[in-house]
Image 1: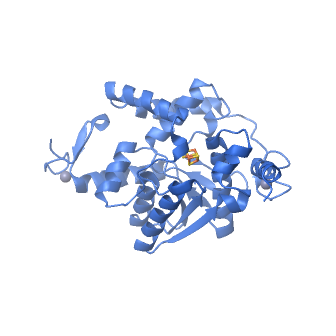
Image 2: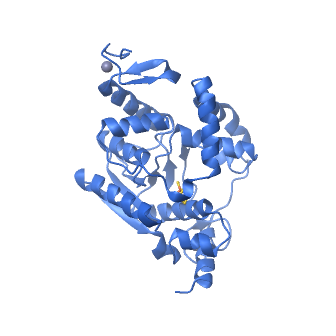
Image 3: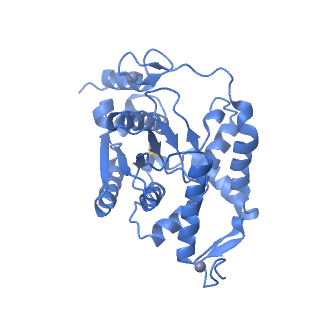
Length: 302
Ligand code: Q46
Ligand code: ZN
Ligand code: ZN
């Protein structure tokens, strides 16, 4: 197999693009996809500093690497979920990455904000772990962006993640979730940061290859709570489709974004107000994070 660009031996074949690339040209291809995502959805301007949410995994560190290389001013945000060794190791990967590149890493601890780490939150509430965790992450990301003066937060969601989320929402016809499925969620309130996903055009395999070729040291283990999550089953189904028909995931996600998503957008926007307890945006009086934190404090007094 030869590189499409230079004819050298290819390092990676991309079946859905019907192409193969050598290492330097794959890196170039990868960055071009990120540039294209940013341009098409007007994710950030070149002057805007970006807060990059990093988990220590391949996707978020690959994203941070590209944004630094593309010349953006960035800082990393690591959310310490308090999930046993997984959190200790993933934080160490983020710290090593940041210090090797002279970047700032902001760390927020769920335990400090919520009163307990995620495994305890799971025990005292009846919520599925990932739902309480996801809620906490979204809340802390926005809070950190506001506190440190960032108008935009970037996350490492890739094509596989986005296609799997879409598949899950469609399987259950969660019509409320469909309009929020987007590579760019604009700010709809002065206290709400814009959220962007510059890797949404790139597959998990491609982000892994990029991280490997760039010598990024990332945590390979998944969060222990990810096992058995339905999102993994959805990814498996999509992987089988992709195997049989390269480009299936891309067509599913991009077809939705281009043709179907507008149909689910509600004419009357949701009115956001400030939470009476913490001042962050919410649709009710007290935000979901404060309610959960209150529940945790009552159930597990320290
Ligand atoms: S960190 Fe949190 Fe994930 Fe672990 S508990 Fe679930 S949501 S799986 S990306
Ligand atoms: Zn080449
Ligand atoms: Zn609140």
